[in-house]
Length: 289
Image 1 (tube, rainbow, N blue to C red):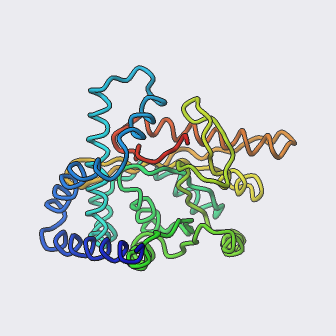
Image 2 (cartoon, rainbow, N blue to C red):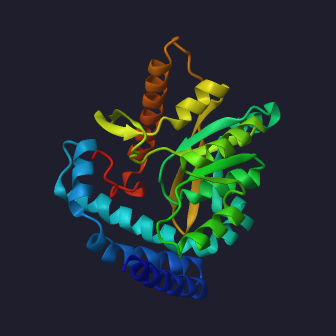
Protein backbone atom coordinates (compact mmCIF):
# COMPACT_ATOMS: atom_id res chain seq x y z
CA UNK A 1 0.00 0.00 0.00
CA UNK A 2 2.82 2.37 0.88
CA UNK A 3 4.58 1.68 -2.44
CA UNK A 4 1.39 2.51 -4.32
CA UNK A 5 1.03 5.74 -2.34
CA UNK A 6 4.63 6.70 -3.13
CA UNK A 7 4.10 5.96 -6.82
CA UNK A 8 0.99 8.18 -6.97
CA UNK A 9 2.98 10.95 -5.26
CA UNK A 10 5.77 10.45 -7.78
CA UNK A 11 3.43 10.76 -10.79
CA UNK A 12 1.79 13.85 -9.28
CA UNK A 13 5.09 15.57 -8.59
CA UNK A 14 6.47 14.66 -12.02
CA UNK A 15 3.34 16.13 -13.67
CA UNK A 16 3.65 19.34 -11.67
CA UNK A 17 7.37 19.64 -12.40
CA UNK A 18 6.66 19.29 -16.11
CA UNK A 19 3.99 21.98 -15.92
CA UNK A 20 6.28 24.29 -13.94
CA UNK A 21 9.05 23.89 -16.50
CA UNK A 22 6.70 24.77 -19.37
CA UNK A 23 5.22 27.92 -17.78
CA UNK A 24 8.52 29.37 -16.53
CA UNK A 25 9.95 30.39 -13.15
CA UNK A 26 7.70 33.33 -12.24
CA UNK A 27 4.45 31.66 -13.28
CA UNK A 28 5.52 28.41 -11.63
CA UNK A 29 6.32 30.25 -8.40
CA UNK A 30 2.85 31.82 -8.38
CA UNK A 31 1.17 28.50 -9.19
CA UNK A 32 3.17 26.60 -6.57
CA UNK A 33 2.30 29.15 -3.90
CA UNK A 34 -1.38 29.13 -4.83
CA UNK A 35 -1.62 25.32 -4.75
CA UNK A 36 0.18 25.05 -1.42
CA UNK A 37 -2.06 27.65 0.21
CA UNK A 38 -5.13 25.77 -1.02
CA UNK A 39 -4.00 22.20 -0.37
CA UNK A 40 -1.34 22.39 2.33
CA UNK A 41 -3.74 22.86 5.27
CA UNK A 42 -5.60 19.71 4.18
CA UNK A 43 -2.52 17.52 4.69
CA UNK A 44 -0.75 19.06 7.70
CA UNK A 45 -2.30 19.76 11.08
CA UNK A 46 -3.40 23.32 11.73
CA UNK A 47 -3.16 22.47 15.42
CA UNK A 48 0.60 21.85 15.21
CA UNK A 49 1.17 25.15 13.40
CA UNK A 50 -0.99 27.04 15.90
CA UNK A 51 0.71 25.31 18.86
CA UNK A 52 4.18 26.19 17.54
CA UNK A 53 3.25 29.81 16.89
CA UNK A 54 1.80 30.16 20.39
CA UNK A 55 5.01 28.78 21.89
CA UNK A 56 7.14 31.32 20.02
CA UNK A 57 4.70 34.23 20.25
CA UNK A 58 2.69 33.85 23.48
CA UNK A 59 0.62 36.98 22.77
CA UNK A 60 -0.18 36.15 19.14
CA UNK A 61 -3.80 36.45 17.98
CA UNK A 62 -5.72 34.39 15.43
CA UNK A 63 -5.37 37.03 12.73
CA UNK A 64 -1.57 36.92 12.96
CA UNK A 65 -1.57 33.10 13.12
CA UNK A 66 -3.56 33.01 9.89
CA UNK A 67 -1.25 35.56 8.24
CA UNK A 68 1.95 33.68 9.14
CA UNK A 69 0.45 30.29 8.24
CA UNK A 70 -0.77 31.65 4.88
CA UNK A 71 2.72 33.05 4.15
CA UNK A 72 4.37 29.77 5.19
CA UNK A 73 2.31 27.71 2.74
CA UNK A 74 2.96 30.26 0.00
CA UNK A 75 6.71 29.97 0.59
CA UNK A 76 6.60 26.14 0.69
CA UNK A 77 4.72 26.04 -2.63
CA UNK A 78 7.13 28.49 -4.25
CA UNK A 79 10.12 26.50 -3.01
CA UNK A 80 8.62 23.26 -4.37
CA UNK A 81 8.09 24.85 -7.80
CA UNK A 82 11.69 26.14 -7.87
CA UNK A 83 13.31 22.70 -7.79
CA UNK A 84 13.00 22.37 -11.56
CA UNK A 85 14.77 25.73 -11.90
CA UNK A 86 17.82 24.99 -9.76
CA UNK A 87 19.89 25.12 -12.95
CA UNK A 88 18.69 28.72 -13.49
CA UNK A 89 19.70 29.70 -9.96
CA UNK A 90 23.02 27.91 -10.44
CA UNK A 91 23.82 29.81 -13.65
CA UNK A 92 22.34 33.19 -12.69
CA UNK A 93 23.11 33.22 -8.98
CA UNK A 94 24.59 36.73 -9.11
CA UNK A 95 21.29 38.14 -10.41
CA UNK A 96 18.90 35.93 -8.44
CA UNK A 97 20.70 35.61 -5.08
CA UNK A 98 22.11 38.74 -3.47
CA UNK A 99 24.95 37.98 -1.06
CA UNK A 100 25.75 39.84 2.16
CA UNK A 101 28.84 39.07 4.23
CA UNK A 102 31.22 38.35 1.37
CA UNK A 103 34.13 39.38 3.58
CA UNK A 104 33.54 36.35 5.82
CA UNK A 105 33.52 33.93 2.87
CA UNK A 106 36.66 35.58 1.48
CA UNK A 107 38.39 35.08 4.83
CA UNK A 108 37.32 31.42 4.96
CA UNK A 109 38.77 30.86 1.48
CA UNK A 110 41.93 32.85 2.15
CA UNK A 111 42.73 31.22 5.49
CA UNK A 112 41.72 27.76 4.24
CA UNK A 113 40.17 27.14 7.65
CA UNK A 114 36.93 25.14 7.26
CA UNK A 115 33.83 26.05 9.27
CA UNK A 116 30.40 24.76 10.22
CA UNK A 117 27.65 26.70 8.42
CA UNK A 118 24.37 26.47 10.34
CA UNK A 119 20.93 27.51 9.17
CA UNK A 120 17.29 26.45 9.10
CA UNK A 121 14.44 25.81 6.69
CA UNK A 122 14.10 29.42 5.56
CA UNK A 123 12.78 30.61 2.17
CA UNK A 124 14.38 28.26 -0.39
CA UNK A 125 17.10 26.80 1.85
CA UNK A 126 18.50 24.68 -1.03
CA UNK A 127 19.96 27.86 -2.51
CA UNK A 128 22.34 28.24 0.43
CA UNK A 129 24.42 25.41 -1.02
CA UNK A 130 24.05 26.72 -4.57
CA UNK A 131 25.56 30.08 -3.62
CA UNK A 132 28.36 28.61 -1.49
CA UNK A 133 29.26 26.24 -4.31
CA UNK A 134 29.39 29.03 -6.89
CA UNK A 135 31.49 31.15 -4.53
CA UNK A 136 34.12 28.43 -4.47
CA UNK A 137 33.64 27.16 -0.91
CA UNK A 138 34.57 23.49 -0.46
CA UNK A 139 31.86 21.96 1.71
CA UNK A 140 29.76 18.89 2.32
CA UNK A 141 26.12 18.77 3.37
CA UNK A 142 24.30 16.41 5.69
CA UNK A 143 20.81 15.54 4.50
CA UNK A 144 17.89 13.26 5.25
CA UNK A 145 16.71 11.21 2.23
CA UNK A 146 13.04 11.40 1.27
CA UNK A 147 10.89 8.47 2.36
CA UNK A 148 9.48 8.21 -1.17
CA UNK A 149 11.76 5.77 -3.01
CA UNK A 150 10.64 7.08 -6.41
CA UNK A 151 11.13 10.78 -5.69
CA UNK A 152 14.35 10.55 -3.70
CA UNK A 153 16.63 9.76 -6.71
CA UNK A 154 15.32 12.86 -8.51
CA UNK A 155 15.95 15.07 -5.48
CA UNK A 156 19.41 13.61 -4.94
CA UNK A 157 20.29 14.22 -8.60
CA UNK A 158 19.18 17.86 -8.45
CA UNK A 159 20.96 18.50 -5.17
CA UNK A 160 24.22 16.86 -6.23
CA UNK A 161 24.27 18.70 -9.56
CA UNK A 162 23.16 22.18 -8.49
CA UNK A 163 23.33 22.45 -4.69
CA UNK A 164 26.23 20.48 -3.25
CA UNK A 165 28.54 17.93 -4.92
CA UNK A 166 29.28 16.15 -1.62
CA UNK A 167 26.13 15.04 0.20
CA UNK A 168 26.13 12.70 3.19
CA UNK A 169 23.02 10.82 4.25
CA UNK A 170 22.04 11.39 7.85
CA UNK A 171 22.63 7.85 9.10
CA UNK A 172 25.18 6.51 11.58
CA UNK A 173 26.82 4.28 8.96
CA UNK A 174 27.92 7.39 7.02
CA UNK A 175 29.71 8.99 9.96
CA UNK A 176 33.07 7.84 8.57
CA UNK A 177 32.31 9.63 5.29
CA UNK A 178 31.71 12.84 7.23
CA UNK A 179 34.98 12.42 9.14
CA UNK A 180 36.82 11.79 5.87
CA UNK A 181 35.58 15.10 4.44
CA UNK A 182 36.46 16.94 7.64
CA UNK A 183 39.99 15.51 7.50
CA UNK A 184 40.19 16.77 3.91
CA UNK A 185 39.38 20.25 5.27
CA UNK A 186 35.86 20.53 3.90
CA UNK A 187 33.46 22.88 5.59
CA UNK A 188 30.10 21.42 6.65
CA UNK A 189 26.61 22.91 6.24
CA UNK A 190 23.91 21.70 8.64
CA UNK A 191 20.23 22.62 8.70
CA UNK A 192 19.83 22.57 12.47
CA UNK A 193 16.25 23.61 13.19
CA UNK A 194 14.32 20.31 13.13
CA UNK A 195 13.49 17.93 15.96
CA UNK A 196 15.86 14.98 15.97
CA UNK A 197 15.58 11.81 18.04
CA UNK A 198 19.34 11.60 18.60
CA UNK A 199 19.54 15.15 19.92
CA UNK A 200 19.26 16.57 23.42
CA UNK A 201 16.59 18.81 24.92
CA UNK A 202 17.71 22.43 24.73
CA UNK A 203 15.65 25.58 24.97
CA UNK A 204 14.29 26.87 21.70
CA UNK A 205 12.12 29.95 22.19
CA UNK A 206 12.34 29.25 25.95
CA UNK A 207 10.85 25.76 25.59
CA UNK A 208 12.83 22.47 25.66
CA UNK A 209 13.13 20.94 22.19
CA UNK A 210 15.14 17.96 20.95
CA UNK A 211 18.02 19.56 19.05
CA UNK A 212 20.90 18.16 17.03
CA UNK A 213 24.30 18.60 18.69
CA UNK A 214 26.24 17.78 15.52
CA UNK A 215 27.34 21.38 14.76
CA UNK A 216 28.64 21.77 18.31
CA UNK A 217 30.39 18.39 18.27
CA UNK A 218 32.21 19.16 15.01
CA UNK A 219 33.11 22.68 16.15
CA UNK A 220 34.51 21.58 19.52
CA UNK A 221 36.40 18.54 18.26
CA UNK A 222 37.95 20.05 15.12
CA UNK A 223 38.11 23.73 16.13
CA UNK A 224 35.68 24.76 13.39
CA UNK A 225 34.13 28.18 13.79
CA UNK A 226 30.33 28.38 13.64
CA UNK A 227 28.94 30.52 10.80
CA UNK A 228 25.19 31.28 10.89
CA UNK A 229 23.72 31.61 7.40
CA UNK A 230 20.33 33.04 6.53
CA UNK A 231 18.35 33.31 3.30
CA UNK A 232 15.28 35.46 2.71
CA UNK A 233 12.79 35.34 -0.14
CA UNK A 234 12.31 38.58 -2.09
CA UNK A 235 9.71 39.40 -4.77
CA UNK A 236 10.00 37.86 -8.26
CA UNK A 237 11.78 34.66 -7.16
CA UNK A 238 14.85 36.52 -5.97
CA UNK A 239 16.66 35.98 -2.69
CA UNK A 240 19.00 37.65 -0.24
CA UNK A 241 21.55 35.45 1.53
CA UNK A 242 23.45 36.68 4.59
CA UNK A 243 26.66 35.19 5.96
CA UNK A 244 26.94 36.19 9.60
CA UNK A 245 30.19 36.76 11.44
CA UNK A 246 31.85 33.46 12.39
CA UNK A 247 32.10 32.83 16.11
CA UNK A 248 34.18 30.59 18.33
CA UNK A 249 33.32 29.13 21.70
CA UNK A 250 35.54 29.26 24.78
CA UNK A 251 35.67 25.78 26.27
CA UNK A 252 34.88 25.31 29.96
CA UNK A 253 36.66 21.99 30.45
CA UNK A 254 33.39 20.05 30.63
CA UNK A 255 32.50 18.49 27.29
CA UNK A 256 28.82 18.06 28.15
CA UNK A 257 28.56 21.68 29.29
CA UNK A 258 30.28 22.89 26.15
CA UNK A 259 27.98 20.85 23.88
CA UNK A 260 24.93 22.22 25.69
CA UNK A 261 26.06 25.86 25.74
CA UNK A 262 27.20 25.95 22.13
CA UNK A 263 24.03 24.25 20.88
CA UNK A 264 21.97 26.74 22.90
CA UNK A 265 23.89 29.58 21.27
CA UNK A 266 23.15 28.12 17.82
CA UNK A 267 19.46 27.82 18.72
CA UNK A 268 19.39 31.49 19.68
CA UNK A 269 20.94 32.45 16.34
CA UNK A 270 18.24 30.47 14.54
CA UNK A 271 15.56 32.14 16.70
CA UNK A 272 16.74 35.55 15.46
CA UNK A 273 16.47 34.35 11.86
CA UNK A 274 12.92 33.08 12.43
CA UNK A 275 11.86 36.37 14.03
CA UNK A 276 13.11 38.28 10.99
CA UNK A 277 10.54 36.70 8.64
CA UNK A 278 8.41 34.16 10.55
CA UNK A 279 6.26 33.41 7.49
CA UNK A 280 9.34 32.05 5.70
CA UNK A 281 10.03 29.31 8.26
CA UNK A 282 8.31 25.90 8.27
CA UNK A 283 5.94 25.87 11.25
CA UNK A 284 4.26 22.55 10.39
CA UNK A 285 7.03 20.41 11.93
CA UNK A 286 6.23 19.10 15.42
CA UNK A 287 9.28 20.88 16.85
CA UNK A 288 8.29 20.78 20.53
CA UNK A 289 6.83 17.25 20.64
